Image 1 (cartoon, rainbow, N blue to C red):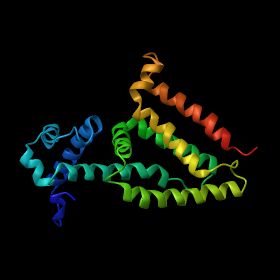
Image 2: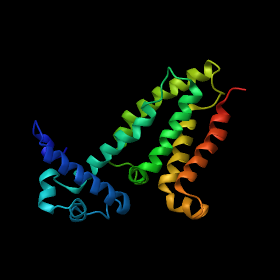
Image 3: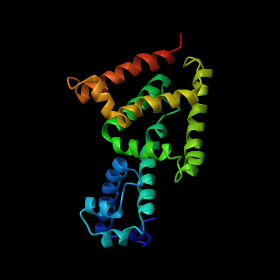
Image 4: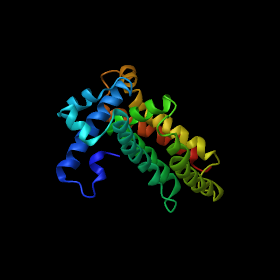
Length: 210
């Protein structure tokens, strides 16, 4: 936890400084990884001195944990929003679109998360095996009920969720490759519109009961 956060009531300036640090740290970790990032680099990106940064966070690992914690909150929001009371195809369509929007609007969070996973998730394994697994299990039960009710074509809900993660996050994690293959004539807006239309045809079409 940030040192400044240990006090009962943080000032507006403390909140702003922490936000500056975490924004700069996200940029640094997403671009350079944990090993390639330094406190000096984060401080420079935040527009402050290293001693000032250390007032808020004791170490690079502490900053990294704070950035990961904020990223995980963002990461879970689209799945949390999957509504058991909603129309199944619309709910899954909405989930796919929220994930695509995250890849478009917050690619650094996706890359940071991917980097942590590729490293073996040393700092968030407990979250993956706890909070994330519990949430996925909860939504899998919802999707299985939709299938049982004949509202979705039969499929394995876990692999559906994995497929949505893999395909939507590809547009953030491999953005350079996507742009290179599509060429400069395809704008970002068109790229995401075409991706959305493709997922509607392939995933939503595949889930539609026959």
